[in-house]
Image: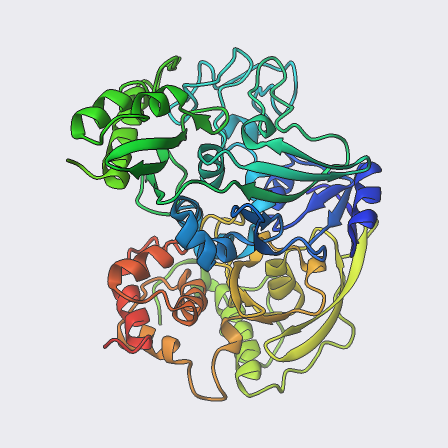
Length: 326
Length: 213
């Protein structure tokens, strides 16, 4: 690990000043410390933000939920409002990592976490995300776990977060604090597809700090849930996953919020699947027909072709679980 | 005598005479660890090192005060030092194990302010004012923690390397109340890998401690 200076801040202004001078924010540290040890990350200064007042979960005026950036994954997953209003978020969090890591990692850090691509984590390998212009070793390497959606010739790495898939499905917003004030970014615009600049992963400006993730109010009753498919049953990243939320009234699907994980360079919203469902009555035939569109536009690589079919089945099964079969 | 190869060539730890080598053997290492563990178990009688070891060289270091197993410690550490290295290399508490050093195995699990965490991914400089409990701090005087006893009762280990992490993690699991069924225990203990494959008995030990058996 390269040497670094360490500073603790107690208010947001102090944090933003340190961030503007190039300091790197650290919250739970579960990704950052790991990558610093691998020399993938080499911050000169760590700015410890765990003392900032960003650790609350509150119900918004409109009936949505605002989860502070410093709320830990385990706190968010166990919170009564999260569990009752958005089970998909609780489930995504509890199917992530381990109990130990969830006690450390925060919501802000969770959506900032970096890819698990082994070439990214190996400083001797070519990786455009880590070393722009060096090439992508995954493109023709061991790419079984890599993305099939949102890829470019520069990068095919997946975004590893489960919670982010739920946030994308529910059309959350990211609240940011910066030297120029506060602003909000729709979740789907916050995480960036690689394009020709895979080193740029979030729509963050220099020194900006995540304050919270806000989930909008959604019509009730809302049923939601998260399904994660992986190589082992627990403590593993997703091969595929599906976050599904359905608002059904009078026997008709009025709203459908769906996103997939483990398959995209960013959490992958599935508008074609959503549109296929809205206005229809739940049935097994409907789930199958809608899920058939889940992998539209997929560009599989040599070793991850299986994800195309697995993704469709994952979405279909979770539609059945959340929506019931009639 | 054991027929194991390398250490059979080492001198017996008689406690007298001159050391044949400055390199610790497995046997002397274990004897040292046991002595340290014993001191802690004896109930807060841990004798602080005269001047806390520092790993500070040219690279930035920080001073941090924390409580480890009930004893207040103030140390100056290189900012890069993990809690795991602080415990093992500076404080002589070698019960917490370094498995993967990347948050992927759970062998380093300790409690920080009552919550189970991976000590390998925790920077020591960030622990100002916290209370850390390691495997060495679980027993109450000469009496083992119920989960330590349960691991013995259920024969829940073979090589033992993952065991301290399993037990501390299990203590967290029981406190959190995720012990409603063997399946729930397995899920909430999944952050601790056992290469010997003792999972069935580990689950039984946690169940026993949670009062289900």
